[in-house]
Every structure is written in C-alpha cells, then in structure tokens.
Length: 465
Image 1 (cartoon, rainbow, N blue to C red):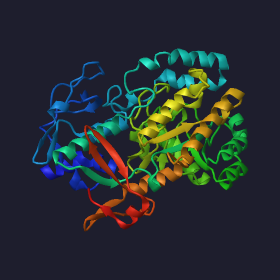
Image 2: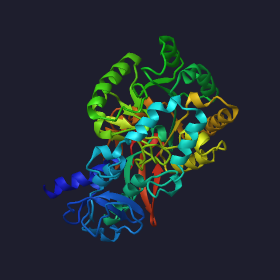
Image 3: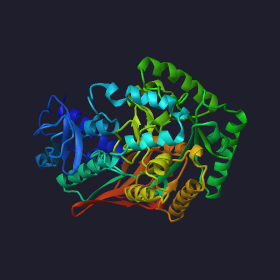
C-alpha cells in the first residue's frame, strides 16, 4: 500500500465524520501496527484495536498504555500510532466486547434468550426483581461511560485538533452536522410490544401532538398482536412514522445466523407491506455484521451505553453513522422501562443529564417510550415532562426535533455533500445543500470550537479560514 493509499484509509473516519475537504487532514501511521488487537488509550479516551506503540490489553484494565505521546508531526503530516478508522469502527460496531474474533461473543447468552422468551408470561413483580438483580452492577461498569459515552466523537475531535496544529492552520471548514444550522437533534420513538401498547397508540399520538412532536411507532408484525390496516393508516395519516420492531419479539432473532437470515426475509416483506424504512430489534439484541440481510434504510438497535440492556456494550458515539448502506441511529438515552422500573426514577433526572450532555455535544438525543409502560400517572407525567423539555429546546433553537426517517435522509444526504473551493470562498455541493450550513472547527487554546455560518453565507459561499 502506498503512503497516499494508507493516508486515505486512516483518514476515512475523520473526513466522513466532519465532511471536510481531504486536504485539511493529513495523517499516516507512525510505524507498522501490531498483529494483535487490544485496549489502549489515546489521552483520556479508551481505544480498541491495533497500535504501533506500547502494549495492548486483551481486557479492560485501569492502567492502559497511552499512545498520545507517540503522536508526532512532520512537515504538516500527523503521524499516529494507531489506525483511527479501525478504532472508530471497533467502537461503533462493539467489536471490543469479549473475543472480538467471534460474533457469538457479542450476542446474548442462551439463558438470556430463554429468559426473554418466557418474560411476558412471568408475574410483573418477579420479572422486575430478576431484572434489578441482573442490573445491580451497572454503575460499576467502567466502559462505555455512564450515562452518555462520546468516546468516538472525542477521539475524532482530538485528531482534527492535532491535524490543524500540525499544519499550522487556525481552522477547517466542514458541512455542519444538522440541517438549517440546528445545534443538535432529537427523536422520540415508541416500541409497541403488546396488545395493550397497540391499543394506546391513538392516545399516545394525541399526547405527542399536544407538544407538536411527531414520533415513530415500531410495530411487531407477527404473533404478539394483530396489526390492522386501520391502525397503520391512522399512524401514517396523522404524520407519524411506522417502523418494524423485530419479527415476533421472542428473543431469538440473533440466536443463529441461518435463523436470522430466514427471519430477515420476513422482516423485509413486512417492511414493504407497512411502507416502513426503519427497524429496531427486540430487547436491542444486535449483531451489525449480519445487517446486510436487512433491506432497510436505517436501524435503531445499538445503544450508546448499554449498561441497562441485557446485551451489554455500546457504540460510544452520540452521532448517526453508517453500517454498510444502513444508517444507524443509536439509542443515546435510557429506555423508559429501565428508568421507571429498574432505576425507579420518575424525576427525569437521568434524561435531563443525558439531554444536556448530548445537546451540548451537538449530538442525537434518541428516546424510547413504550405505550405499554405508560399506563400509570407517574409514568405519564414523566413522559409529558420529557416532551415539554424537548419542545422548549426546539423553541429556544437548540434542537431539531424530527422523525427518525427525516434524520436518516438528512444524514445520507450529508454523507454525499462536499465542500468545493470558489476563489477565496467555499460552497456546498450535493443534494440537500439548501438546508446545509458551512461550519468551521477552530483552535482556541487547547480546545476545538465550532462556528456555524448563517444561511446567507452558506448560500453564497464564505471566506476560507
């Protein structure tokens, strides 16, 4: 591999994340990478992959080798002791979990699948006792960070900062993350798990509409309950969105690859019948290496921090990303069921903390609120408070509150946009550019700050920094 080819490979994640001109990012490997993968640090950030300096631990330990001092700059070229694109992929796709050479290590165990197969037949009190017992150590899990982990985003920001310094540049132009210059984004989704939840869908749409927020409903197409055309039509006609939720929600979707592929054909059929473009698995079971069998535009099954999910892990980012041609919209906040029945918290304090962290980091705040679990007053009041908070953020201009499908379409358009030089200015090229904004990532001391140009500057071009 030539130096130029090597640079393009390791720069890929950074250029794709920021949608900045390639000439502003110049990185190469410091030396040959190790044969084995493991955990190491890049400053304060935990990484997983190969490296060319120090040691790598097969398990997460407290004193990991820090590769940051091995980063050097020479004639404007940043030399790094690991492949940033590999590390980012390993985190987003949860390849740091267990034996990363085995996909089975990332799937739920047989007892977990058996539990979820009989879960709906258990008395509620027994089910919640078992769940609290299983999750009692969730705050002791060191990685990903609780309650929000933005390791991927921080690694890429740090690398861009170092790249700017290596080339003695004050800033770099890029395509802003969200349309119309919105500082952040939020989506609200409803997984309909039972007939009780199905029968609350109309009521829940009324609640959402009262705050001016449109949401998506993930429907289980087989076995759990009947799905009437009238309900699907009502959801669509009222401006809400329909997605597929697993196949039958029995906990076995990812138990075996051949079985998954068989079920994926049925899921794809229902997606066409329901005119659904999105998918979420039951219990957030997942194996992104198998997603190619799904004929969907986007997935919403990978948590940011899966401390309160049966399948632990997390993608460590608050931004959407691609898995092949599928846009992943990660779940970046705690599910309502976990909030209300595992944490026994109806104060919304965890949601508030997560919202401020995600919005402050210009990310995607994504929520699951099950109609099945909104039957009592405390839960309804907590959910109403969440909608009120999101509507206030929207009114204050701090957040774009959208449907998942709108976010997927935007992220797909943005991924194809480029910045083209126009004399001493820049212009955005690509479908959807009328809503896109030029932004600058600029050095301010030891920090990287963002400055978003107004619409007029994006339309006519803006001076290079």
